[in-house]
Image (cartoon, rainbow, N blue to C red; front, side, top):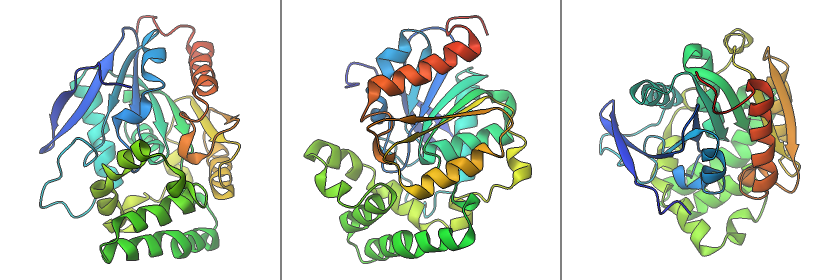
Length: 285
C-alpha cells in the first residue's frame, strides 16, 4: 500500500494533478491506465525507489483529482501535455516512463512529440488500436466500446465498466474482483465516462509510421501470456515501427494485471532492462 507517502499536487492547465514521490537518482514516472490511478503502482513503488527517484501520479480526472463541471471529454493529447508539464515543472527531464495500458498510449505520444523529455519508455500492453487492421478495430468498437457506452448512457455505470473490462481483459474479470479492487476501479468511474465520451480519433490518436519514427527513446514492450490476441497483434505491429525496441512476456499475467499479478517478475524485467541499457539507476543525468 502507498498510505505512508505524502500526497502532493501540481497545478497544471487549470487543474490539479496529485502524485507521490520517493527515492533518489534518475527519475522514473509511473503512468497508470484507464479506470486506475497512482495507487496501481503499489507493488513497484518501493522496489524501484531503492534505485531511482520514482513519481506516481494520477492522470487528469482520475482519483483523487477533481473533475471540472465543464469537462465533457478527455482527449489523449491533453493527457500527453499534462505529462509533459509534470516532467518540466518537477525538473525530471529526461525521465524513464513506466506505463500501463492507456498510460502507455499517453507515454508513446509524449515520446513522439517531446523526445527531449524522455530517456526510455516501458510500455505495458499498449492498446495501439489504430495499428490493427480496420476490420479488427471495427469489431472491437462494435463488441466492446459501443455496448459499454450504451450502458453508461443509460446510467448503468457498473455495467458499462464490466463490459469494457471483460472485453479488454477477459470475460468475467470484473465480477471476480475482490471488493477493494472493485472500489478502486469505481473510484475512477467518472474519468472512464469522459474517456468513453471522447471521439475515437481524439481518444486513440491515429498514430502513423511517420509519427512513430519520431520516437527515439529505447522502448520495452511488455504483454502478459494471458493478454488478448488483439493486444498481442497491436504490440507486434508497434514493435515493427519503432527504431530501438525489445519485447517480453510476463508469465501468469493478463492485460489487467501486468505489473500486479506477477510483480516480482515484472519488477525484475523492468529494472533489469534499465540497468542493462543505462548501466545504473543512480548515475548522474
